[in-house]
Length: 333
Image (cartoon, rainbow, N blue to C red; front, side, top):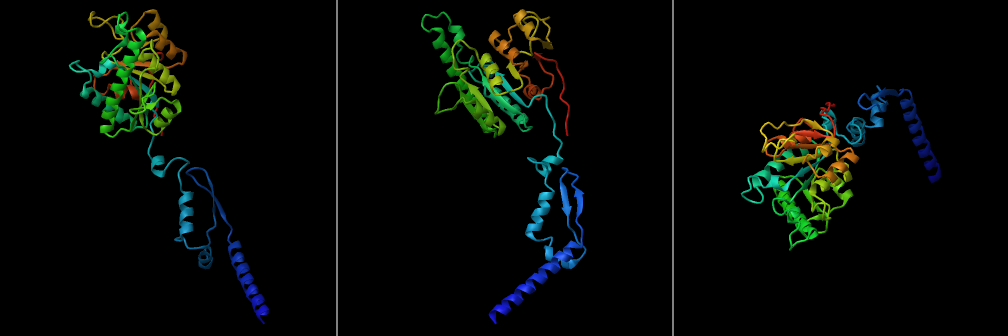
């Protein structure tokens, strides 16, 4: 008796299943192309309320998730991001070289907090646009190793190491200023100072930039006899940055010293050969050669003029461009 009842139940379930399948089969699926990203969507809508109840209510959690997935934006973007037009700036990853003398401001003190705050605010304005910013700082406002050459007390190597320590002091000051206004910042030094900064690791630096953090490179290259200009060119090549922005106390590169010649003319563009052949005091020859070999353009501009940093980072015409023509980046949507 129990066996016959089981067979009867199985027959009833099988009949119900076949009936539901035939109902669904009578409604042919409609193939449509999702116009947003070109995906193929199969619409199995039916006009029968009974079939709809069998397939599940549109308010069912599983169906609601399916509808959300089918309307998703392309991989890596949200709907809001896809709807907002994106602008392509001239450079997406830059290296900003700030000299120690520029940080001193009017030279009444070693570091002028107004200067560091001005740098921090302008860097903040461009990092919000998605531009990745790395910074190399000099140390000439505190100690310049090359000025001690020939001194009987310090040899060149010792003097250069002291100068590297001065760049770390500037980097920590600049980091504290940036983080005071909410810019995530990391300091990486060329030699280990684990208590105050990270050691320089190229892949880690690139990862910080990809996460929207500003990376400040300190201690130069970690070797004596090399300037922080060379460190800027080297780090720029290592992290695949697209340009070196050299912030100074003058408007750019002149054909003569503007402090002694009031008729000195500001040069708009220069080639690497112009810098070397005319012995223009822009950067040391090692840095210029390194930039030339790696096709890295250099922009020399005045740090003290408000807005110049953000203009240079965005690729707008400011100061003197070495190693390429001024071209504006097209907007993209």
